[in-house]
Length: 154
Image 1 (tube, rainbow, N blue to C red):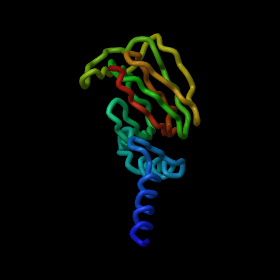
Image 2 (image 1 turned 60 degrees about the vertical axis):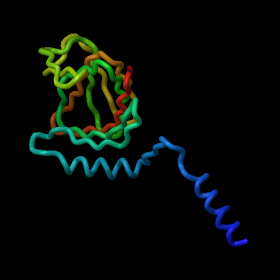
Image 3 (image 1 turned 90 degrees about the vertical axis):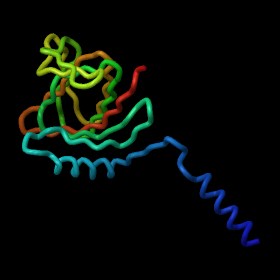
């Protein structure tokens, strides 16, 4: 009887486990991680990030910024942003100024011309398709934290 009870308990615990590939990051965990990322900022205020998961065709990270970013374009990946805290402006579309390939399928430059400006705030969700120039701008002294999913288009 005891063996049957142990077997049933083992099966129940296996059935209660999360499915393969499932991920959940609770708000409190993200807030704690945001504080940890903010403390990792260097004197240049380069963005601090933490990879949350990699699922093969997409990955998820949390990024904390305290300065504006470069213009960028991903030739084979879409970006899906979920703003956690802070405010920023995104420039999307247009043309990357002085584009340089910095890694395979990655283009960067100092700015964008002829792009559209959009305000971003907590709770906003934004999708940027592959081959679309974009640049995050922060006002001096501001902080901005967001979750980003990189999705391979190919």
